[in-house]
Length: 222
Image 1 (cartoon, rainbow, N blue to C red):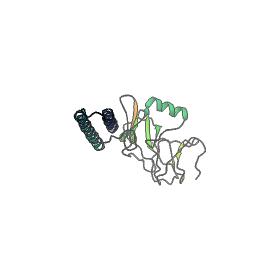
Image 2 (cartoon, rainbow, N blue to C red):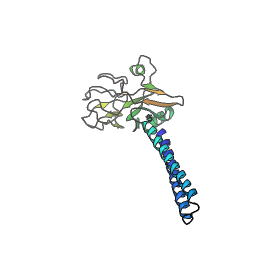
Image 3 (cartoon, rainbow, N blue to C red):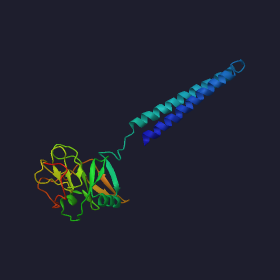
């Protein structure tokens, strides 16, 4: 934001400098035939030149300061991303029968109902408002794992790794563990905020907190 403001200021100042220059040329053309006005014309041109140099210096200083201004990362991977209103996310998941995918954050929002303080995901701070966020990368070789609507599992197209709706590795999968997840919290406006700066709470092989069975045919055959 600071950089954009400084750039706008620089443009305004540059336009002002150009205007002064044009006015000086018009004044010079209008009075070129007059010799009695030479002193006043020189004074005007000197003032215009001084003003232009001042404007240029201010614009250069503003641009330099803007380039050194720290950039605040918001809404990008590696920062805190607002995934949406909690109620809206629940509604979309229930309507589509599928997780909500967030392109900027590279994650899926899934339903995970648990308020048990001893639950591994509740302890890790990755559950809020009945929702959990799963990183899109497979724990096997890092391929992006799509969601299969028929099986209701996450299925890796690279080597057939399978994960339930909680991102937990299923039996027979080549993946060594479940999917990573991100810390989440609900902000004061009821939106799900996701901290994508750190991957946490990857469940090891054998963890199954849902007991979920395939709902239908798999999208990626073994």
